[in-house]
Length: 280
Image 1: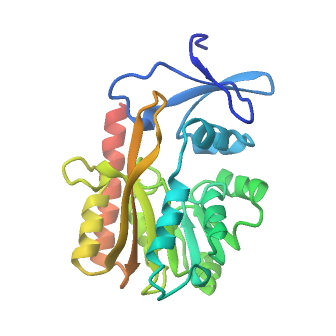
Image 2 (image 1 turned 180 degrees about the vertical axis):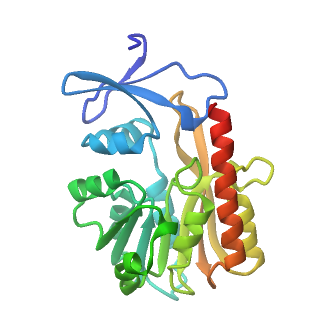
């Protein structure tokens, strides 16, 4: 391990250290070193399964050290969007997609959201939520959302969510447009959608994920009405540079039709193929 890495103190002292940041280094490639139980280890910042396995490490890295503010920003924007009096935070039942260990659900509950279901691809995320925030969710789905059948979704449908929340989980191979679309279709019509996404993923020129195309289609077909939007600093990079995201809160006015779902699925396949080629 590199002994020249910069040391960072956190409330739980994992002796987190970063390499010297390189110009143009993408956040998906960021890595760090830390110590746990006397052992020095190295992980990628986006290696969520391994992060969740170490109690307190995710918070120490992402929130204390890299100053992530996305859960608070989207929760506050949601409060602003419902302040017109047509509905209240207490009326909302959230589906938290890419739920992780429950930080977003905790922030929503602090602002009055009555209940939440979690969903995440990783079983380690559900285990971490049960360990760290056992009261955060009424239920928790694990797996690829596009692969769930009626039996898998029975509990969520009985819960009848009217808010879809996706925070800092879109793109980068975490949640592709196809998964977002499948979760969208489980939300009640005239429900709310709140998400954050890296600002370049909403640009047709820079986006390779398909989200710029999907959001444009949703608005063009009047399936999404944007009520509030905010550009903000999501967190800092390992080199201390700000990483800007966009938070969006809007209303859903119908299901995403099959032809859009098919295009989303094709985009997910293309993105995966591009990722394999880039890593070759």
